[in-house]
Amino acid sequence: MLIKTELCAQSDLYIVKPTQFSSRIYNEFSPVFYKGGIVFCSDQNDNSLMSYKGGQNRLFKIFFVTKKGSSGWTHPKILAKGITSAFNDGPATFNENGNIIYYSRNNSIENALRNISDTSNKLGIYSAELVDGIWTNIKPFTYNNPLYSFCTPALTPDGDRIYFSSDMPGGYGGMDLYYCDRLNNDWDKPVNLGPVINTSKNESFPFACRFGKLFFASDGHKGFGGKDLFYTQEINKEWISPVHLDSAINSTADDFGIVIDSTFENGYFSSNRQKTDDIFSFSLAPLEFTNCDTIKENKYCFTFYDEKQRLIDTIPAIYQWDFGDGIMHLGKEVKYCFPGPGKYSVKLTIIDGLTHDTIAKQVEYKTELENINQANINSDKVGLVDKSISFKGVLTDLKGFRITDYFWNFGDGFKPGGPLISNTFKNKGDYIVKLGLLSEKDSLGVIPKICVMKKIVIK
Image (tube, rainbow, N blue to C red; front, side, top):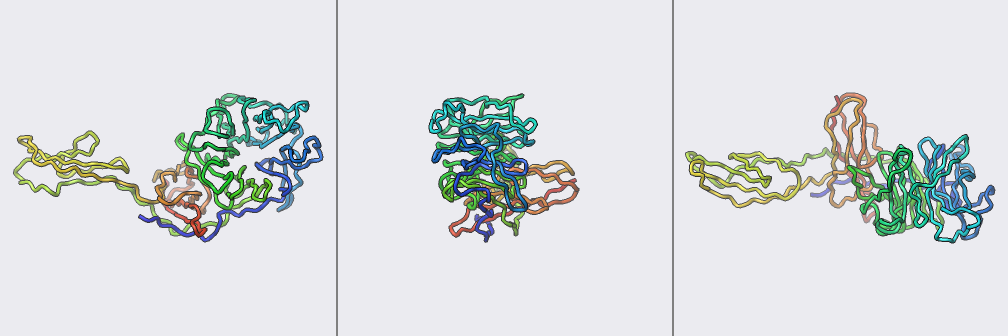
């Protein structure tokens, strides 16, 4: 069965531009939102700190820029001297209130030991608290280890989980992604994200955002070259296969360190596509889906009856059906529902009701049931006003269509989302929920699109 697709004429899903505060001379990377501005890492000069100027062996510091007017930016400045060391600092992540920071830095920061080429001085994760405008109370992450690196931390929006990258033993190779859940006033033991996410190479620069989406960079998953950006999501305690981001964001160079706003329509990422690490902005290009198909129901229930045997009505016959479920079903006609897609066998035996001798034993009939090759929305069909309903696009069975982006429409236009999303309806009535999917570009540079819709009744 062929997949019905639209052809998306636009060449890219996102509009990408270099930011004004990237120098094009030095390196800037790993942007995060903070107090209406952007915090990022850079090895550029800052007059307030002369100690880390050093030619090719320049050290990275945590910088901050804010908006200036409608389109400009202030000159980058060091975020805070209190968390600036004589070694490498950053990337950083903040809690929702902006008064707690977690950031990477070298473990040994004493000036007497200052040797920036010393590979034994591993990176660790540290936290600090903003008190009366000053970053103080610097603490090491519970699981820092001088033998291994712990870096690129990322807090979830609720602050109850922290993601990071580490080369500690027990991983799958290179740098792996881990997380720790909050336990009282500290963090529980690190959990490796597993082989679906981590490869024999390197996964790092996580960013956790709404709907449970986790973005990260990898040079181990299939991409365009170097580090590429992907996202995943944990559903039913399992991570879905990483989704490769649009080609406007990913390139043949290294692309990493992404941050996205709450609408999933605007954000920033870093890339060395211009020979140095620079920060780029991106915004969602106008996108619409038309000709949405109604989801077809998969049929697993059938009525079975015998067409071969023509028995005399005076013979009391017993029709015995075996569907392989361990239960014998009796009757000339039997309705049976298979549990889902798969290979099945059906056997019919006809028995004399008086003598219990076998009158006829049919040849075993084998069949294979498959899901309809379509996009799918898995959700309740009926809901209540002001009660959240979960919608899943993960049960999508599409051949030859590698999903890169999910767009949901609950009556207010298509908005970016993930394979799992929730929505609350404010009024009773009938609603049409639509799911639009994009695939990787074809050989002509065209983005295939698919759209399906499902009726939801709200009472």
